[in-house]
Length: 201
Image (cartoon, rainbow, N blue to C red; front, side, top):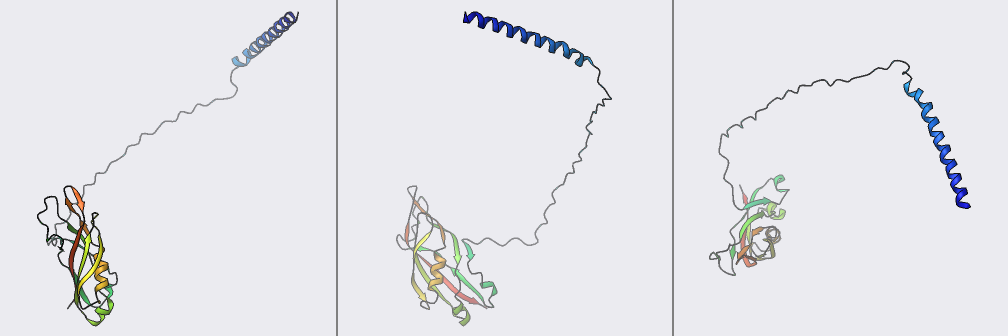
């Protein structure tokens, strides 16, 4: 009995929905066919053709140098004293060639000997500069596998202790191409370097 009542109710609801939809369809036909009221303006935007003028610029040929450039010095020297330019003294500090005590010059290595890449000029001590004192320091150190310097110490100095710290500070900033044996970088101990402190003029 319940199923029969539910079936009748469903049929009545479906029939009413069908009638409602039919009424909406018939009522909307007139709205679709009515002409549009008022004036309708159509805008068509035309894209203006733009012409781009390309101006070719030819690079100017650099002027030929009057004098040839000075030859490059090896190894590279960096001045680590920013106050040196303000001094009235004209001085120079030179760094001489390296010598390895562990194996002589070790030039028989077929893989590659250690080579200096960057050598920093030492800071001339103000006390020595103001007194016009010159001298030199022989520094001994170890060139590591990475090409840096460690364990720097003074072997000989003239005069004693006056230029020691400036020479050690400069030596610790040196950069090297490390020695390579059998394809591997190795440390080089006992490398000595003479750093001279001279006042010119």
